[in-house]
Length: 365
Image (cartoon, rainbow, N blue to C red):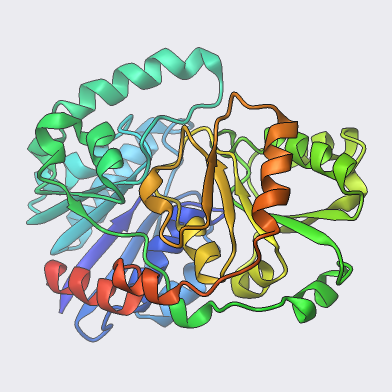
């Protein structure tokens, strides 16, 4: 049996966690055992991981306890033998785990790029983050035996032009059997949303990269045009209080439905008329794949989301320089097109998880 160690996931689960778990769920668990090394003392996906025969190994948060993190990370490799590590990155500020994997003789060491630009919180951290990323980008191929990316633009950003051509594209595939086009009546009823409401939806971790205060501004403009509109906001994260406070101050807070982090995404997508993703940084978002699998038209950030996301032909790209009112009008016009079944197009483009997981599993084995 191949023993795989996965690093780089965290709570609350977001798009990266969703994409990785889709693959792991579809591995043959008699052929490959997947353990997870995560920061903190708890991980919401732990029960499912353990049900598939894996273990969750907890690490101290690096910025709070760098010495404790370093000791715990080395202990993982000293105590156990792994055939492969699969490390997930939204930026290369820390590649210690890959360095340790090489030091302790793990033969297959895969780095996986998930974004095409750097997210950061405090402006004061911008330049140190960029400096660390650029430094590690120049040496990543010394520690990773293989380079993965969710898209070509993510590969170029994370690994540089020299190494980007060597990167293997691992699509943010989804279990398309879980998603289907629906009128959403039952989903709306369960959420307390009127059947005749116009529902703009969003799924994402509450963090700086997702630009969700701007999303609230967009919806406030939309609500002025259509008072019967509702924003269905799915997700949780470190900016929870700020985003909720911004919604309350916007004057349309009563029309925003916050669900928190959820795993029953197909039903939530079904309740939407249009999907909105005004991210600052992104790449190839798995949520856009899931939304299209549910037949939803999408309006996304032109700066953050690459054009190849438009698998269904129903994805519209709007500049972040455009006003909230311009975004709102695009949401209304795009949503008016209605839902369309594009499962076949997604399958043909390689976004069906069953075949994608089999390919990746065979690679690791």
